[in-house]
Figure 1 (cartoon, rainbow, N blue to C red):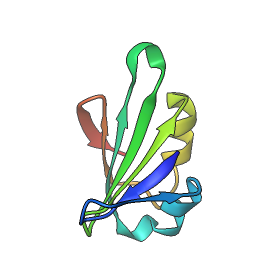
Figure 2 (figure 1 turned 90 degrees about the vertical axis):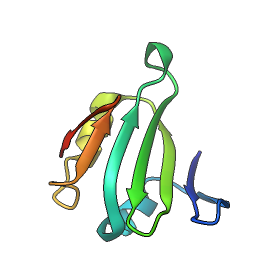
Figure 3 (figure 1 turned 90 degrees about the horizontal axis):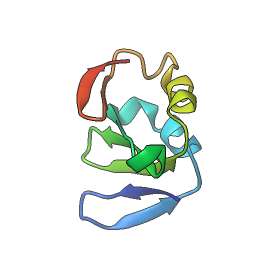
Figure 4 (figure 1 turned 45 degrees about the vertical axis):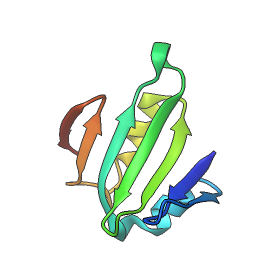
Length: 86
């Protein structure tokens, strides 16, 4: 399930990763959180207006391919607590 957490705390379900691609210009930073044993991984994108895009993501390698797009290059990204840049 993918959703957007609004600034007032409400949650709105969105269809898929297409949402974040349509709103790429508002993304401030990205985050990957690995679940136990590599399961239940989470991808978060924090937007400049305070919203958060959140989705489950199965594979770190596939996620790296997804974020390796010109629109995300240069953004701060945190992977399991370690921060760098795309």
